[in-house]
Length: 431
Image 1: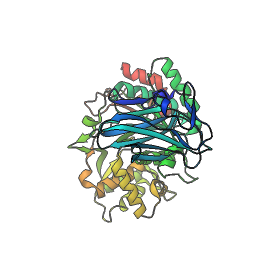
Image 2 (image 1 turned 90 degrees about the vertical axis):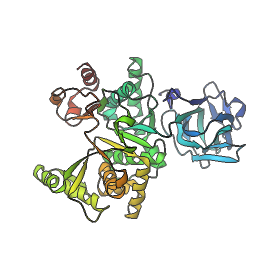
Image 3 (image 1 turned 90 degrees about the horizontal axis):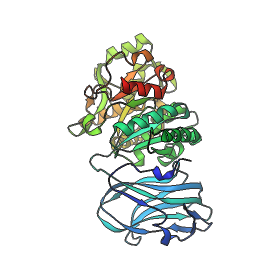
Image 4 (image 1 turned 120 degrees about the vertical axis):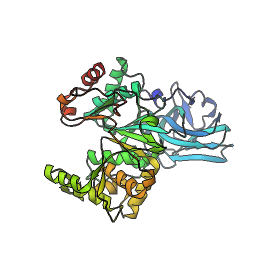
């Protein structure tokens, strides 16, 4: 099992780490051993306290441990003033990720002297509590990276994370969402990467089913992994763990220093990777190349599918269309929440409803910003990472410099199937 001590350790800045020693005097309905405080079949507070000072700010709180089973009434809450003021209360429904009981955002509007993070359990709850990490976030520059991955892409995800450690600021958290059943292969690969020194810590790993359940976006049974991946990318916004986040495909990596603030913001607006195209010309291109996309369960010309998305937001489509580049979605959580609200106005159920109509998360987000929030729409070119489709294409042009707008590579089929992740990464660094 991946060591939970690494979860949430994302910044050299202000971090409060509460261990089971800090809770030693505040165990109420549990039993302590060397590594954890365990439930003993009694309902009520497992732990309370430990009454710590905490300054005003926004934090990510990771409650560490292992959940075997939970019953109704198992919760985590954050309070002060002897429990009279409640900041957050969240149900424990299932394990959030390896070594993670749950994780959530905490806003403290003013300095306090007696912060409590308490666990309440029912008599049939079985869990082991191993401490809490409270990581302060920058209110003005609240960024994160998100990778939704599967067992088949696990090798690429390890390389992506290793490149992140080298080229992205350490205070920017990296979230990796995986199916629960794929944990073993990620565990093995990250352990190997740690032993060889390729990574010195782990990403924050969340289970796919926890993310979907926690955000109210449980997909219908007919959704495959591709559909679920798109829902996760949008639904992540509802966890409140970051204001802005960059979604990363697994088969990509950074080779140049990447900074959200300088690369993706213009005049205080988060830029959208989009290129302006003539609608008639791009639709004809889709016809000529016979490019198909899904719309209401049927394969149609890509132009028809994307126009149908646009038509949800505007009755009069302009001649100029913004073509959204799907390799990296740069999302604003507040805009995603507004998009989900608009989905309800259309009669669709949350993000799953949008993806069921037409499974292209970037197109939904991009059309919504273009037509409904034009004051927040600012396209940026080129793509953040250089797309590589054919293996031989990799070294056909100059390597990314950062100054050219490229900060690494994105590998698409067939390149991602033909190239070896570690060998490709090392070759690109040496080039």
